[in-house]
Image 1 (spheres, rainbow, N blue to C red):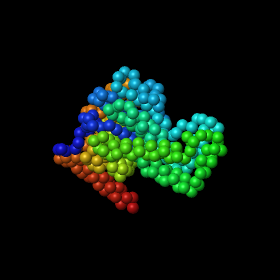
Image 2 (image 1 turned 45 degrees about the vertical axis):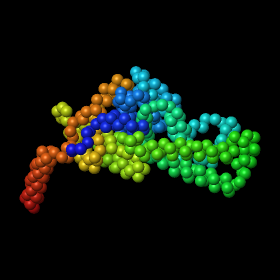
Image 3 (image 1 turned 135 degrees about the vertical axis):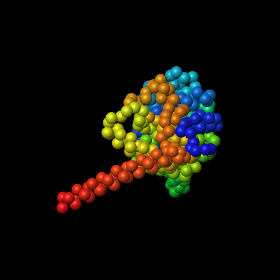
Image 4 (image 1 turned 90 degrees about the vertical axis):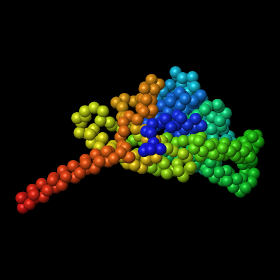
Length: 357
């Protein structure tokens, strides 16, 4: 391919084999808007799309202005786009007495960090796998949670070995506890281990798919600021470690010189953004980088999402062209002028000091 990859998400729409699309990044960069628009665009080229939010804030309902639950619901105005919101924590609304052995088991599993989320996620994947969606988009929680989703097989592995160690060490303790609570054999440790094993199988099977670039891709969403650049670099490294394919970055909230801007503050902000945009384009020259303009209002509702989706399909503006000689020459000329100005300012200051003496 000549030059840099196209700055759009068209490559995702063209990849007909894709089954899982993760959208992640630091909090507050517009992941939900981006994942919602991606799911809308995918619904135009694929038979059926499911978008899942694993963010406890449940911004998906706000984006589409429709209430979603843990059951897939058809999005208003579509016949092939469904949405669901999943709480990554296991729901535990039942009183202790009703839970009985389950509560006892729950306390044991809670001793293993992340296992409650793992079990919840496994249940959801089990549910999703029984449904016939051509592609599933994950509107994920901030970065840390996303990476924890990908670590679940090893979390469950640790959980199982701990449970086995408990079983070997304490023998019939769990069975005695079952009798103590007056519950039947269905709540014994073998049942729990069986459940964990089943979930581990589901997650391992799904993780095999997550590591297949034909089936899975991860879209990183960020903004042109230092912390976001740093967070994106960390995310890309982690994804590489987990062997998850990533070749799309969406840079949101970009200020453009589309009209005459008088504000010194906005001009200073644009200058700062340009510095980080250049760094993004230099660091990720083999990624499809889609840059989106900062909007004066929130993108809420299907109509607004559809309208904004045009920016995902056509580059808004060539911000940085690494292979362009003209661009490089312009930048060098600009730097020379700035340097000359700085030198003359410095000379003036030196002369001023000498006169003062």
